[in-house]
Length: 548
Image (cartoon, rainbow, N blue to C red):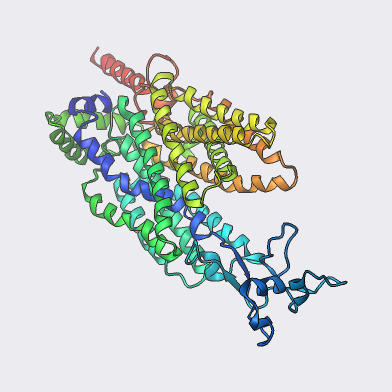
């Protein structure tokens, strides 16, 4: 007897499962809105030095705004006025196209900056003057945020396996709401950075919890569908962010706007069930029976007998008795250790490649809102494509294929001349779509590889490796100053190597989810039998020998 057997009796994909998916959509839409929020709230609008210190009240005051800028701010080699420098004194000779025999003295902006507010009413840059010598601080907020996501993945991975998916999901909701709204009212850069760290920390809990809770309630045949639906929620949120940012041009109001949907998520949390798999694996057969009965009622099936549920619970907790699972269990046994190392490399490669490409692809000559929307929309066909292929070619082939093809697209672009920009753009967009397909695959693949008793810890660990890849991606792009092609070569190599590594992972297509570490360690003895079936065989054999 396996959990899949119970699900088949009460319908593993009926109205009950559809309700769960629906309730988890709104929080998953919030995730990309916050992950990519820095593109808008940290945008640096055109700016120049405040010229008030140069106003002598006579000649200068009679000039037009264009003339004041011309005589006060030096121009670069491209003829564009510099953003961070000003003349020590107005150069009126420039109005008559005359030039001085000596270079005029220039200074750093003395009285702050004047910003172009035609696109943004307010951003972090305009709020705290994060420009010129302080411009790196706008990028730092994103790094701090992803550090929060990184450590949140580790923390919530442990808490979810110890205290359950449902309770920690609520804790994640509340944490993001509190720190998300608080960051919108921060009165200093340091306070804002701290609040963004804890917002990212909470979002990590929503990310890993919503995926696992969805997949653990559906049957084997619909796991890929659930994985893709959850991934499509990311694309929807990504596209909505472009619309939100276009309508709300103040950074404080924009943060409130993208955080607000979690209020609805908290209200609907009361209808979200705990994972029956987790309850059974932790010996709580009575509570699991309640949720399984609700599932049967919603799906219009007969309720399961108490004996079946208790029997399955006893089987599943056999290995867990007397154990408190931690991240160390990912590396204590041979096959779990191999699985952790390989999946960690794959997650690092997937994230580093995806964000490396996303940050490198240039726009289409459109405004930033439309460009952001198009980039998000491109991911949708990629996800639908991978959904079709996952059940045809399997998880392992899809994971390896998308990564290797992504690396190939980057490699091809290295040799295409710059003047063939339209060809380069098509290949770059194809690469981005493939990298998103690899991200969609790895979420589903990972939940199927690890056993229930430690699945959340595993997702916490792999999410940590993913955020490590996200943090490194911008640093890789900085190597362009060393050699123009070096970032592309590194990202290409990472994609291909991680793709080859994924070929070493076991296939999980149509296989029952492993419940215990013992299921993983015993897998592979017979390639035609799933881990759960092997465990069942051992159990039945022991019962048979006892009877004899």
